[in-house]
Length: 414
Ligand code: SF4
Image (cartoon, rainbow, N blue to C red):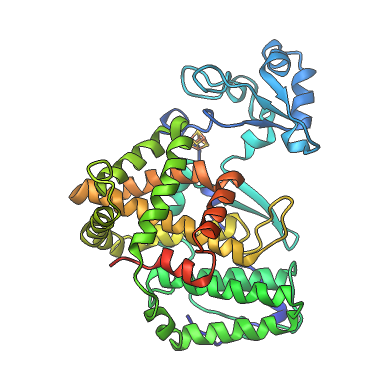
C-alpha cells in the first residue's frame, strides 16, 4: 500500500463493486436454491399486478399464496407462503421458477428479479453487489484471484477538513482504505482486520465528540502507520487467547445449530467443525482448545496460505454489500466501532469453523468446503439482525467489546 497519491481529495471516489453483471443463475443445478426456506417478499406493485392478473395461477397466488406483511415498506408488502417442504409453491419439479418460465421475468417480484444482487445508491450512483448466500454468486466472488487487486492509497492522505458522515468523501475514504488494507499481505489477515477495527474505534470517538475536522488527520496518520509498520509493536503485544475464541465459538454454535435446522449445508459444516475439534468426545475447554489449535496449524494454515484471496474476497465483498463501516440498520444510530466488532467476529467465526472443518477433512479439505461454509453461513447470519444483536450482546457479556477483546477473538492461534 502506498501512502502517497496524486488524486486530489475533491476527486476521491469510492471503489465500486464490478462483477454483478457477470452473474447467471444456475437454475436446476443450484445446490442451495433461494426458492426454499426463506421469506420471499413481494413488493406492492407486483402484489397488485398478481391480484389483477387475467392468468388464473397468479390470481390464486395473490389470494391464498401470499400473506400481507405489516408495516409501510412497499418492497415488503407481502410474503409468499411456503409449502410443507419449505419451497415456494411456484418452484416447479424441474427446479425452475414457474412464474418466470410461464409468464416471463417481468412478472417476478422485485426481490426475486434482483436476488442475489444487493442494490445501494452511493453518491447518486446505483451499485450492485453480489450476495454470497447464493452459491453461484459465492463462486464468482470468492474464487476470483483478481477481485479488486487495487494497489494504491491515492487521495487518502489529502482529505478536506470537516468531512463527516454521511459525506460521500468519508465513505469513499473508509471504503478505499478498508479494501487496500484487506489486500495488504505484509500483515496477517487477522492483523489487517484488527488495524481496521482500531481505525473504526477512533473514527467513532471523533464522531461522538463532534470533532469531524480531525478525521482527515486520523486517516492520514493511519495510512502512514500501516505503511511505515509503526503498529507492529501493538500487533506483537496482542496476547494469545485461543481458549476464549473456542468458548465464544461454542456458545454461538448452539445458536447456529438451532438456526441451521432449515439450512442443511450449514448444519453439515457445523457438524464437520465439531468433529474436527473433537467436540462430543470431550467437552473440556483445554482439550477442545488444543484440538482446535492443532487443526488450525496442521491443516487450515497451509491451506489458507495458498488460498488467501478467498477470505480477502469475502471481506471485500462484505465492505461493499453492507456499506461498511456505515452500515444502515433500522432504529439504530450508525456506529463504525460496533460494525467493526461485528465484522471481526463474523470473520472470526468463519475462520474458526473453517479451521475445525480442515481438522476433520485433513488432506481432503478444499476450496469447495470453504465455499460451502461461507455461502451457508452468509445465508443464515449476514442478514439476520437478531443473530448479530445476539453476537454483540455476547461480546459485551464476556467483556470482549473493547479493542483487547476484539484482538483476542482475532489473533491466529498459530
Ligand atoms: S441461489 Fe442463486 S443460483 Fe441458486 S437458484 Fe437462487 S439465484 Fe439461482
